[in-house]
Image (cartoon, rainbow over all chains, first blue to last red; front, side, top):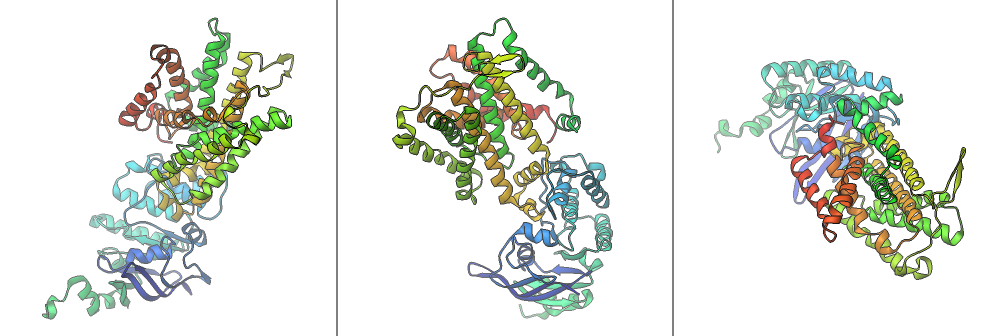
Amino acid sequence: MTLLRLEGLGKQFGEIWALRDLHFTVAEGEIVGLVGPNGAGKTTLFNLISGRLKPTTGRILFGDQEITGGEPHKVCHLGIGRTFQSSRPFARLTTLKNVLVGRVFGKTFRFRARREDLEAAREILDVVGLLHKADTPAGSLTPSEQRRLDLARALATRPRLLLLDEVAAGFSPVAVKQAVGLVRRVQERGVTLFIIDHFLNLSLRVSDRLLALDHGEKAAEGAPPEVMRNREVIRAYLGLRHEGDH
Amino acid sequence: MGEDLWKRAFPGPERGVPLLVLLGLLFLPLLARSSDYVLSIFTHALILATLALAWNILGASGSISLGHAAFFGVGAYGSALLSADFAISPWLTIPLGGLVAAALAAVMGLICRRLRGAYFALATLAFVEIPKVITDNWDGLTRGSLGLVGLPGLPAFHLGPWHVNIARSMSASYYLVLVYTLVVVFLVALVWESNLGLALHAVREEETAARAAGVHMDRYRLFSLLLSAFVTGVSGAVYVHLTRYTAPGLAYSLHFSAVPVIFALCGGRFTVLGPALAALLLYPVDQFIFNPLLPAGHEFLYGLVLVLAVLFLPGGFWGALRRSP
Protein backbone atom coordinates (compact mmCIF):
# COMPACT_ATOMS: atom_id res chain seq x y z
CA MET A 1 0.00 0.00 0.00
CA THR A 2 1.31 3.43 -0.91
CA LEU A 3 1.89 5.63 2.13
CA LEU A 4 3.51 8.68 0.52
CA ARG A 5 3.03 9.81 -3.06
CA LEU A 6 4.85 12.74 -4.63
CA GLU A 7 3.38 13.99 -7.90
CA GLY A 8 5.43 16.40 -9.99
CA LEU A 9 6.86 18.04 -6.90
CA GLY A 10 9.03 21.10 -7.52
CA LYS A 11 10.50 23.99 -5.53
CA GLN A 12 12.00 27.11 -7.01
CA PHE A 13 14.18 29.57 -5.07
CA GLY A 14 14.54 32.69 -7.19
CA GLU A 15 15.88 31.44 -10.52
CA ILE A 16 17.02 28.09 -9.20
CA TRP A 17 14.99 24.92 -9.08
CA ALA A 18 16.10 23.16 -5.88
CA LEU A 19 13.78 20.31 -6.81
CA ARG A 20 12.10 19.75 -10.16
CA ASP A 21 9.16 17.58 -11.24
CA LEU A 22 9.74 14.72 -8.83
CA HIS A 23 7.47 11.68 -9.00
CA PHE A 24 8.01 9.08 -6.30
CA THR A 25 6.13 6.78 -3.94
CA VAL A 26 6.97 5.19 -0.61
CA ALA A 27 5.10 2.04 0.42
CA GLU A 28 3.95 1.34 3.96
CA GLY A 29 6.61 -0.50 5.99
CA GLU A 30 9.48 0.31 3.63
CA ILE A 31 12.85 1.81 4.42
CA VAL A 32 13.83 4.15 1.60
CA GLY A 33 17.22 5.85 1.43
CA LEU A 34 17.50 9.30 -0.14
CA VAL A 35 21.01 9.84 -1.51
CA GLY A 36 22.79 12.44 -3.59
CA PRO A 37 25.65 14.93 -3.42
CA ASN A 38 25.50 18.28 -1.63
CA GLY A 39 22.84 20.56 -3.05
CA ALA A 40 20.94 17.72 -4.69
CA GLY A 41 17.71 18.80 -3.01
CA LYS A 42 17.43 16.13 -0.31
CA THR A 43 16.69 18.41 2.63
CA THR A 44 14.47 20.61 0.43
CA LEU A 45 12.37 17.52 -0.28
CA PHE A 46 12.03 16.81 3.45
CA ASN A 47 11.13 20.43 4.13
CA LEU A 48 8.40 20.23 1.49
CA ILE A 49 6.93 17.01 2.88
CA SER A 50 7.00 18.23 6.50
CA GLY A 51 5.39 21.57 5.63
CA ARG A 52 8.35 23.77 6.44
CA LEU A 53 8.44 24.91 2.80
CA LYS A 54 5.58 25.26 0.35
CA PRO A 55 6.12 23.63 -3.05
CA THR A 56 6.12 25.67 -6.25
CA THR A 57 4.60 22.82 -8.27
CA GLY A 58 3.08 19.41 -7.65
CA ARG A 59 1.21 17.58 -4.92
CA ILE A 60 2.04 15.51 -1.85
CA LEU A 61 -0.35 12.77 -0.78
CA PHE A 62 -0.08 10.97 2.54
CA GLY A 63 -2.29 7.90 2.68
CA ASP A 64 -5.39 9.17 0.94
CA GLN A 65 -5.02 12.77 2.12
CA GLU A 66 -3.45 15.66 0.29
CA ILE A 67 -0.99 17.48 2.55
CA THR A 68 0.59 19.83 0.00
CA GLY A 69 1.67 23.03 1.78
CA GLY A 70 0.15 21.97 5.12
CA GLU A 71 1.45 23.61 8.28
CA PRO A 72 4.19 21.65 10.09
CA HIS A 73 2.13 20.86 13.20
CA LYS A 74 -0.77 19.58 11.10
CA VAL A 75 1.52 17.36 9.04
CA CYS A 76 2.88 16.02 12.32
CA HIS A 77 -0.62 15.34 13.67
CA LEU A 78 -1.40 13.35 10.51
CA GLY A 79 1.55 11.09 11.23
CA ILE A 80 4.77 12.39 9.68
CA GLY A 81 7.67 12.89 12.07
CA ARG A 82 11.08 14.30 11.18
CA THR A 83 14.57 14.95 12.47
CA PHE A 84 16.92 17.71 11.36
CA GLN A 85 20.26 17.74 9.58
CA SER A 86 21.81 19.57 12.50
CA SER A 87 19.89 18.49 15.58
CA ARG A 88 17.58 21.03 17.18
CA PRO A 89 17.19 20.21 20.87
CA PHE A 90 15.17 22.32 23.31
CA ALA A 91 18.46 23.12 25.01
CA ARG A 92 17.27 24.33 28.43
CA LEU A 93 14.68 21.59 28.84
CA THR A 94 15.59 18.19 30.20
CA THR A 95 16.00 15.30 27.79
CA LEU A 96 12.78 13.79 29.12
CA LYS A 97 10.83 17.01 28.55
CA ASN A 98 12.16 17.20 25.00
CA VAL A 99 10.56 13.84 24.28
CA LEU A 100 7.45 14.77 26.26
CA VAL A 101 6.83 17.66 23.84
CA GLY A 102 6.53 15.15 21.00
CA ARG A 103 4.35 12.86 23.07
CA VAL A 104 1.97 15.56 24.31
CA PHE A 105 1.62 17.62 21.12
CA GLY A 106 2.21 15.00 18.43
CA LYS A 107 -1.44 13.98 18.26
CA THR A 108 -3.87 15.72 20.60
CA PHE A 109 -3.34 18.25 23.33
CA ARG A 110 -3.95 17.75 27.04
CA PHE A 111 -3.48 20.47 29.66
CA ARG A 112 -1.46 18.34 32.06
CA ALA A 113 0.97 15.53 31.25
CA ARG A 114 -0.41 12.25 32.50
CA ARG A 115 1.62 9.53 34.08
CA GLU A 116 1.23 7.45 30.92
CA ASP A 117 2.78 10.25 28.83
CA LEU A 118 5.83 10.33 31.09
CA GLU A 119 6.11 6.56 30.95
CA ALA A 120 5.83 6.58 27.16
CA ALA A 121 8.53 9.26 26.95
CA ARG A 122 10.83 7.20 29.19
CA GLU A 123 10.21 4.09 27.14
CA ILE A 124 11.25 5.93 23.97
CA LEU A 125 14.35 7.34 25.69
CA ASP A 126 15.21 3.75 26.52
CA VAL A 127 14.83 2.72 22.86
CA VAL A 128 17.40 5.33 21.78
CA GLY A 129 19.63 4.62 24.78
CA LEU A 130 19.25 7.96 26.55
CA LEU A 131 17.22 6.94 29.59
CA HIS A 132 20.18 7.55 31.90
CA LYS A 133 20.24 11.17 30.67
CA ALA A 134 16.51 11.78 31.26
CA ASP A 135 17.08 14.66 33.69
CA THR A 136 20.03 16.25 31.88
CA PRO A 137 19.40 19.51 30.02
CA ALA A 138 19.38 18.62 26.32
CA GLY A 139 21.89 21.38 25.60
CA SER A 140 24.61 19.52 27.47
CA LEU A 141 24.26 16.24 25.56
CA THR A 142 26.97 15.27 23.06
CA PRO A 143 26.21 15.83 19.34
CA SER A 144 25.53 12.14 18.76
CA GLU A 145 23.22 12.03 21.80
CA GLN A 146 21.39 15.09 20.47
CA ARG A 147 20.80 13.30 17.16
CA ARG A 148 19.28 10.37 19.01
CA LEU A 149 17.19 12.81 21.05
CA ASP A 150 15.88 14.34 17.82
CA LEU A 151 14.88 10.85 16.75
CA ALA A 152 13.27 10.11 20.12
CA ARG A 153 11.23 13.32 20.02
CA ALA A 154 10.02 12.50 16.50
CA LEU A 155 9.18 8.92 17.52
CA ALA A 156 7.20 10.22 20.48
CA THR A 157 4.75 11.91 18.10
CA ARG A 158 3.71 8.36 17.05
CA PRO A 159 4.43 8.81 13.33
CA ARG A 160 3.50 6.41 10.54
CA LEU A 161 6.27 7.91 8.41
CA LEU A 162 9.55 9.14 9.82
CA LEU A 163 11.87 11.43 7.85
CA LEU A 164 15.43 11.04 9.13
CA ASP A 165 17.85 13.72 7.94
CA GLU A 166 21.47 12.53 8.29
CA VAL A 167 21.03 10.64 11.57
CA ALA A 168 24.36 8.88 11.20
CA ALA A 169 26.51 11.62 9.65
CA GLY A 170 29.88 11.81 11.32
CA PHE A 171 29.29 8.66 13.36
CA SER A 172 32.12 6.24 14.09
CA PRO A 173 31.79 2.73 12.57
CA VAL A 174 30.60 1.43 15.95
CA ALA A 175 28.00 4.18 16.25
CA VAL A 176 26.80 3.51 12.70
CA LYS A 177 26.31 -0.14 13.62
CA GLN A 178 24.23 0.98 16.61
CA ALA A 179 22.25 3.33 14.37
CA VAL A 180 21.48 0.41 12.03
CA GLY A 181 20.08 -1.51 15.00
CA LEU A 182 18.09 1.54 16.05
CA VAL A 183 16.56 2.01 12.60
CA ARG A 184 15.58 -1.66 12.57
CA ARG A 185 13.92 -1.30 16.00
CA VAL A 186 12.00 1.74 14.75
CA GLN A 187 10.84 -0.23 11.70
CA GLU A 188 9.67 -3.05 13.97
CA ARG A 189 7.37 -0.53 15.68
CA GLY A 190 5.52 -0.28 12.37
CA VAL A 191 7.08 2.96 11.19
CA THR A 192 7.91 3.60 7.55
CA LEU A 193 11.28 5.31 7.13
CA PHE A 194 12.62 7.79 4.60
CA ILE A 195 16.31 8.37 5.31
CA ILE A 196 18.61 11.06 3.95
CA ASP A 197 22.11 9.69 3.91
CA HIS A 198 24.69 11.74 2.10
CA PHE A 199 27.61 9.52 3.00
CA LEU A 200 25.72 6.27 2.37
CA ASN A 201 27.03 4.75 5.60
CA LEU A 202 23.56 3.89 6.88
CA SER A 203 21.22 3.59 3.91
CA LEU A 204 23.23 0.95 2.03
CA ARG A 205 22.79 -1.38 5.00
CA VAL A 206 19.16 -0.83 5.87
CA SER A 207 17.32 0.46 2.81
CA ASP A 208 14.89 -1.61 0.77
CA ARG A 209 15.13 0.97 -2.01
CA LEU A 210 17.14 4.07 -2.81
CA LEU A 211 16.14 7.34 -4.45
CA ALA A 212 19.10 9.25 -5.88
CA LEU A 213 18.82 12.97 -6.58
CA ASP A 214 21.19 15.20 -8.49
CA HIS A 215 20.71 18.94 -9.02
CA GLY A 216 17.10 18.70 -7.92
CA GLU A 217 16.15 15.91 -10.31
CA LYS A 218 15.74 12.20 -9.92
CA ALA A 219 18.93 10.46 -11.06
CA ALA A 220 17.87 6.91 -10.26
CA GLU A 221 15.64 4.78 -8.07
CA GLY A 222 15.57 1.10 -7.23
CA ALA A 223 17.35 -1.55 -5.20
CA PRO A 224 20.53 -0.22 -3.52
CA PRO A 225 23.09 -2.22 -5.56
CA GLU A 226 21.41 -1.21 -8.82
CA VAL A 227 21.30 2.46 -7.93
CA MET A 228 24.92 2.44 -6.85
CA ARG A 229 25.97 0.99 -10.21
CA ASN A 230 23.93 3.59 -12.06
CA ARG A 231 26.10 5.76 -14.30
CA GLU A 232 24.27 8.98 -13.41
CA VAL A 233 24.72 8.37 -9.70
CA ILE A 234 28.41 7.57 -10.04
CA ARG A 235 28.86 10.68 -12.11
CA ALA A 236 27.03 12.81 -9.56
CA TYR A 237 29.17 11.55 -6.69
CA LEU A 238 32.54 11.08 -8.37
CA GLY A 239 32.48 13.26 -11.47
CA LEU A 240 33.24 12.05 -14.99
CA ARG A 241 36.98 11.39 -14.68
CA HIS A 242 36.75 7.68 -15.56
CA GLU A 243 34.91 8.56 -18.74
CA GLY A 244 37.83 10.68 -19.79
CA ASP A 245 35.94 13.64 -21.21
CA HIS A 246 37.03 16.26 -18.62
CA MET B 1 -0.45 17.13 43.86
CA GLY B 2 0.27 20.56 45.31
CA GLU B 3 3.28 19.21 47.17
CA ASP B 4 4.42 17.48 44.01
CA LEU B 5 4.28 20.78 42.13
CA TRP B 6 6.25 22.49 44.89
CA LYS B 7 9.00 19.85 44.78
CA ARG B 8 9.19 19.88 41.01
CA ALA B 9 9.36 23.67 41.00
CA PHE B 10 12.05 23.76 43.70
CA PRO B 11 14.29 20.71 43.52
CA GLY B 12 17.25 22.15 45.44
CA PRO B 13 18.19 23.67 48.78
CA GLU B 14 17.08 27.12 47.60
CA ARG B 15 13.56 25.87 48.36
CA GLY B 16 13.55 27.90 51.60
CA VAL B 17 14.09 31.31 50.01
CA PRO B 18 10.54 31.90 48.71
CA LEU B 19 9.10 30.74 52.03
CA LEU B 20 11.28 33.19 53.96
CA VAL B 21 10.33 36.01 51.61
CA LEU B 22 6.66 35.14 52.02
CA LEU B 23 6.95 35.11 55.83
CA GLY B 24 8.70 38.48 55.75
CA LEU B 25 5.96 39.93 53.55
CA LEU B 26 3.20 38.49 55.74
CA PHE B 27 4.57 40.03 58.91
CA LEU B 28 5.82 43.29 57.41
CA PRO B 29 2.85 45.42 58.62
CA LEU B 30 3.27 44.05 62.15
CA LEU B 31 6.91 45.05 62.43
CA ALA B 32 7.19 48.01 64.78
CA ARG B 33 8.83 50.36 62.31
CA SER B 34 6.58 49.68 59.34
CA SER B 35 5.17 53.10 58.64
CA ASP B 36 2.60 53.78 55.95
CA TYR B 37 5.52 54.96 53.83
CA VAL B 38 7.28 51.59 54.08
CA LEU B 39 4.03 49.77 53.34
CA SER B 40 3.31 51.94 50.30
CA ILE B 41 6.77 51.17 48.90
CA PHE B 42 6.22 47.44 49.32
CA THR B 43 2.68 47.68 47.90
CA HIS B 44 4.15 49.28 44.82
CA ALA B 45 6.90 46.65 44.74
CA LEU B 46 4.24 43.91 44.80
CA ILE B 47 2.34 45.54 41.93
CA LEU B 48 5.58 45.65 39.97
CA ALA B 49 6.18 42.01 40.89
CA THR B 50 2.84 41.07 39.34
CA LEU B 51 3.81 43.01 36.20
CA ALA B 52 7.11 41.15 35.98
CA LEU B 53 5.36 37.80 36.55
CA ALA B 54 2.77 38.61 33.89
CA TRP B 55 5.40 39.85 31.46
CA ASN B 56 7.21 36.54 31.84
CA ILE B 57 4.15 34.51 30.76
CA LEU B 58 4.84 35.97 27.33
CA GLY B 59 8.58 35.81 28.00
CA ALA B 60 8.29 32.05 28.39
CA SER B 61 7.50 31.81 24.68
CA GLY B 62 10.68 33.74 23.88
CA SER B 63 8.96 37.01 22.94
CA ILE B 64 10.38 40.15 24.52
CA SER B 65 7.76 42.87 24.94
CA LEU B 66 8.86 46.46 25.48
CA GLY B 67 5.30 47.72 25.51
CA HIS B 68 3.45 46.23 28.43
CA ALA B 69 2.55 49.74 29.61
CA ALA B 70 -0.11 49.60 26.89
CA PHE B 71 -1.90 46.80 28.76
CA PHE B 72 -1.30 48.39 32.15
CA GLY B 73 -2.71 51.68 30.86
CA VAL B 74 -5.87 50.35 29.20
CA GLY B 75 -6.50 48.11 32.20
CA ALA B 76 -6.24 51.13 34.49
CA TYR B 77 -8.32 53.42 32.27
CA GLY B 78 -10.86 50.73 31.46
CA SER B 79 -11.56 49.98 35.09
CA ALA B 80 -11.38 53.64 36.17
CA LEU B 81 -13.90 54.85 33.56
CA LEU B 82 -16.30 51.94 34.03
CA SER B 83 -16.41 52.45 37.77
CA ALA B 84 -16.53 56.27 37.66
CA ASP B 85 -18.97 56.77 34.75
CA PHE B 86 -21.24 53.77 35.18
CA ALA B 87 -21.03 53.43 38.96
CA ILE B 88 -20.05 49.77 38.70
CA SER B 89 -18.22 48.36 41.73
CA PRO B 90 -14.44 48.34 41.25
CA TRP B 91 -14.46 44.67 42.29
CA LEU B 92 -16.22 44.02 38.98
CA THR B 93 -14.46 46.59 36.82
CA ILE B 94 -10.98 45.33 37.78
CA PRO B 95 -11.35 42.03 35.88
CA LEU B 96 -13.12 43.95 33.10
CA GLY B 97 -10.00 46.14 32.86
CA GLY B 98 -8.02 42.94 32.36
CA LEU B 99 -10.37 41.92 29.55
CA VAL B 100 -9.94 45.29 27.84
CA ALA B 101 -6.17 44.77 27.97
CA ALA B 102 -6.55 41.25 26.55
CA ALA B 103 -8.69 42.60 23.71
CA LEU B 104 -5.99 45.13 22.88
CA ALA B 105 -3.43 42.30 23.01
CA ALA B 106 -5.50 40.28 20.54
CA VAL B 107 -5.28 43.15 18.06
CA MET B 108 -1.55 43.50 18.65
CA GLY B 109 -0.98 39.75 18.45
CA LEU B 110 -2.70 39.49 15.09
CA ILE B 111 -0.75 42.45 13.69
CA CYS B 112 2.60 41.17 15.00
CA ARG B 113 1.98 37.48 14.28
CA ARG B 114 4.92 37.13 11.90
CA LEU B 115 7.40 39.20 13.94
CA ARG B 116 10.14 37.69 16.07
CA GLY B 117 12.96 38.80 18.35
CA ALA B 118 14.03 42.42 18.04
CA TYR B 119 11.35 43.18 15.43
CA PHE B 120 8.60 42.04 17.77
CA ALA B 121 10.16 44.00 20.65
CA LEU B 122 10.33 47.22 18.60
CA ALA B 123 6.77 46.77 17.38
CA THR B 124 5.54 46.48 20.97
CA LEU B 125 7.52 49.57 21.95
CA ALA B 126 5.80 51.56 19.20
CA PHE B 127 2.42 49.97 19.89
CA VAL B 128 2.13 51.69 23.30
CA GLU B 129 1.66 54.99 21.51
CA ILE B 130 -1.66 53.88 19.99
CA PRO B 131 -3.74 53.58 23.20
CA LYS B 132 -1.77 56.44 24.74
CA VAL B 133 -2.55 58.90 21.93
CA ILE B 134 -6.20 57.80 21.87
CA THR B 135 -6.50 58.26 25.64
CA ASP B 136 -4.76 61.61 25.43
CA ASN B 137 -7.06 62.98 22.73
CA TRP B 138 -10.49 61.42 23.18
CA ASP B 139 -11.49 64.06 25.73
CA GLY B 140 -15.18 63.11 25.77
CA LEU B 141 -14.44 59.61 27.00
CA THR B 142 -11.18 59.85 28.90
CA ARG B 143 -10.98 63.59 29.95
CA GLY B 144 -7.81 63.63 27.84
CA SER B 145 -4.52 64.80 29.25
CA LEU B 146 -6.13 66.25 32.37
CA GLY B 147 -6.36 62.71 33.67
CA LEU B 148 -8.83 61.36 36.18
CA VAL B 149 -8.95 62.32 39.86
CA GLY B 150 -11.13 61.24 42.75
CA LEU B 151 -11.69 57.79 41.31
CA PRO B 152 -13.69 55.27 43.34
CA GLY B 153 -11.55 53.40 45.82
CA LEU B 154 -12.15 49.78 46.68
CA PRO B 155 -15.31 49.50 48.81
CA ALA B 156 -15.04 48.32 52.40
CA PHE B 157 -16.14 44.76 53.10
CA HIS B 158 -16.49 42.32 55.97
CA LEU B 159 -14.11 39.39 56.25
CA GLY B 160 -15.42 37.23 59.09
CA PRO B 161 -15.30 39.36 62.21
CA TRP B 162 -13.16 42.11 60.61
CA HIS B 163 -14.30 45.24 58.87
CA VAL B 164 -11.77 45.85 56.08
CA ASN B 165 -11.60 49.36 54.71
CA ILE B 166 -9.00 49.38 51.96
CA ALA B 167 -9.44 53.03 51.10
CA ARG B 168 -8.59 54.06 54.68
CA SER B 169 -5.97 51.57 55.73
CA MET B 170 -2.52 51.24 54.15
CA SER B 171 -2.00 47.79 55.63
CA ALA B 172 -5.34 46.61 54.23
CA SER B 173 -4.26 47.80 50.77
CA TYR B 174 -0.96 46.08 51.27
CA TYR B 175 -2.54 42.75 52.19
CA LEU B 176 -4.96 42.96 49.29
CA VAL B 177 -2.10 43.41 46.83
CA LEU B 178 -0.13 40.63 48.57
CA VAL B 179 -3.04 38.21 48.12
CA TYR B 180 -3.38 39.30 44.49
CA THR B 181 0.36 38.73 43.97
CA LEU B 182 0.11 35.21 45.40
CA VAL B 183 -2.78 34.47 43.05
CA VAL B 184 -0.65 35.62 40.11
CA VAL B 185 2.31 33.51 41.31
CA PHE B 186 0.04 30.48 41.52
CA LEU B 187 -1.39 31.17 38.06
CA VAL B 188 2.06 31.53 36.47
CA ALA B 189 3.33 28.38 38.23
CA LEU B 190 0.28 26.47 36.98
CA VAL B 191 0.87 27.61 33.39
CA TRP B 192 4.61 27.00 33.68
CA GLU B 193 4.31 23.41 34.86
CA SER B 194 1.41 22.50 32.58
CA ASN B 195 1.63 21.29 29.01
CA LEU B 196 0.81 24.82 27.98
CA GLY B 197 4.07 25.95 29.57
CA LEU B 198 5.85 23.04 27.90
CA ALA B 199 4.65 24.33 24.51
CA LEU B 200 5.85 27.86 25.33
CA HIS B 201 9.28 26.65 26.48
CA ALA B 202 9.62 24.47 23.38
CA VAL B 203 8.72 27.34 21.05
CA ARG B 204 11.22 29.58 22.85
CA GLU B 205 14.05 27.06 22.65
CA GLU B 206 13.58 25.85 19.07
CA GLU B 207 10.64 27.11 17.07
CA THR B 208 11.16 24.90 14.01
CA ALA B 209 11.57 21.73 16.06
CA ALA B 210 8.56 22.58 18.21
CA ARG B 211 6.32 22.95 15.18
CA ALA B 212 7.65 19.75 13.63
CA ALA B 213 6.81 17.98 16.92
CA GLY B 214 3.18 19.06 16.58
CA VAL B 215 3.09 22.30 18.58
CA HIS B 216 0.54 24.73 17.11
CA MET B 217 2.87 27.67 17.67
CA ASP B 218 0.65 30.61 16.69
CA ARG B 219 -2.07 29.44 19.05
CA TYR B 220 0.21 29.17 22.09
CA ARG B 221 2.07 32.40 21.39
CA LEU B 222 -1.23 34.26 21.11
CA PHE B 223 -2.61 32.63 24.24
CA SER B 224 0.46 33.59 26.27
CA LEU B 225 0.18 37.17 25.02
CA LEU B 226 -3.51 37.36 25.95
CA LEU B 227 -2.96 35.91 29.42
CA SER B 228 0.05 38.14 30.00
CA ALA B 229 -1.92 41.22 28.92
CA PHE B 230 -4.94 40.23 31.01
CA VAL B 231 -2.90 39.98 34.23
CA THR B 232 -1.06 43.21 33.40
CA GLY B 233 -4.40 44.95 32.83
CA VAL B 234 -5.76 43.67 36.14
CA SER B 235 -2.64 45.00 37.87
CA GLY B 236 -3.19 48.38 36.23
CA ALA B 237 -6.80 48.36 37.43
CA VAL B 238 -5.86 47.40 41.00
CA TYR B 239 -3.23 50.12 41.00
CA VAL B 240 -5.59 52.82 39.76
CA HIS B 241 -8.18 52.07 42.45
CA LEU B 242 -5.52 52.27 45.13
CA THR B 243 -4.01 55.57 43.95
CA ARG B 244 -7.46 56.87 42.84
CA TYR B 245 -6.06 59.12 40.13
CA THR B 246 -4.38 58.61 36.79
CA ALA B 247 -3.34 60.40 33.61
CA PRO B 248 -2.11 59.23 30.20
CA GLY B 249 1.50 60.06 31.08
CA LEU B 250 1.26 58.00 34.27
CA ALA B 251 -0.75 54.99 33.12
CA TYR B 252 1.19 54.52 29.86
CA SER B 253 4.51 55.52 31.42
CA LEU B 254 7.66 53.92 30.04
CA HIS B 255 8.31 52.85 33.63
CA PHE B 256 5.63 50.15 33.38
CA SER B 257 7.10 48.86 30.13
CA ALA B 258 10.72 48.85 31.21
CA VAL B 259 10.59 47.70 34.80
CA PRO B 260 9.03 44.24 34.16
CA VAL B 261 11.72 43.52 31.56
CA ILE B 262 14.48 44.57 33.93
CA PHE B 263 13.10 42.52 36.82
CA ALA B 264 12.55 39.46 34.64
CA LEU B 265 16.05 39.59 33.16
CA CYS B 266 17.72 40.25 36.53
CA GLY B 267 15.70 37.71 38.47
CA GLY B 268 15.67 34.97 35.88
CA ARG B 269 13.37 34.80 32.90
CA PHE B 270 13.53 31.01 32.74
CA THR B 271 12.07 30.72 36.24
CA VAL B 272 8.64 31.34 37.73
CA LEU B 273 9.69 33.36 40.78
CA GLY B 274 12.84 35.16 39.59
CA PRO B 275 11.02 38.21 38.16
CA ALA B 276 8.93 38.65 41.34
CA LEU B 277 11.91 38.24 43.68
CA ALA B 278 13.87 40.81 41.67
CA ALA B 279 10.99 43.29 41.97
CA LEU B 280 10.81 42.80 45.74
CA LEU B 281 14.56 43.25 46.09
CA LEU B 282 15.38 45.99 43.59
CA TYR B 283 12.44 48.37 43.95
CA PRO B 284 12.80 48.81 47.75
CA VAL B 285 16.59 49.16 47.41
CA ASP B 286 16.01 51.83 44.78
CA GLN B 287 13.44 53.66 46.90
CA PHE B 288 15.03 53.42 50.35
CA ILE B 289 18.70 53.81 49.43
CA PHE B 290 19.25 55.31 45.99
CA ASN B 291 16.30 57.68 45.80
CA PRO B 292 17.36 59.70 48.91
CA LEU B 293 20.98 59.76 47.71
CA LEU B 294 20.28 60.70 44.09
CA PRO B 295 16.76 62.12 43.75
CA ALA B 296 17.29 63.00 40.07
CA GLY B 297 18.95 59.90 38.66
CA HIS B 298 18.31 57.09 41.09
CA GLU B 299 16.91 54.80 38.40
CA PHE B 300 20.44 54.32 37.09
CA LEU B 301 20.43 51.42 39.57
CA TYR B 302 18.15 49.48 37.23
CA GLY B 303 20.41 50.09 34.25
CA LEU B 304 23.47 49.07 36.23
CA VAL B 305 21.92 45.89 37.62
CA LEU B 306 20.56 45.00 34.20
CA VAL B 307 23.97 45.34 32.56
CA LEU B 308 25.61 43.29 35.33
CA ALA B 309 22.95 40.59 35.08
CA VAL B 310 23.18 40.32 31.30
CA LEU B 311 26.99 40.19 31.42
CA PHE B 312 27.54 37.88 34.36
CA LEU B 313 24.29 36.06 35.12
CA PRO B 314 22.45 35.57 31.85
CA GLY B 315 19.91 33.35 33.61
CA GLY B 316 19.28 35.97 36.33
CA PHE B 317 20.23 35.65 40.00
CA TRP B 318 17.36 33.34 40.89
CA GLY B 319 18.06 31.33 37.75
CA ALA B 320 21.67 30.93 38.88
CA LEU B 321 20.48 29.39 42.14
CA ARG B 322 18.20 26.99 40.33
CA ARG B 323 18.64 24.04 38.05
CA SER B 324 17.11 23.91 34.57
CA PRO B 325 13.36 24.49 34.29
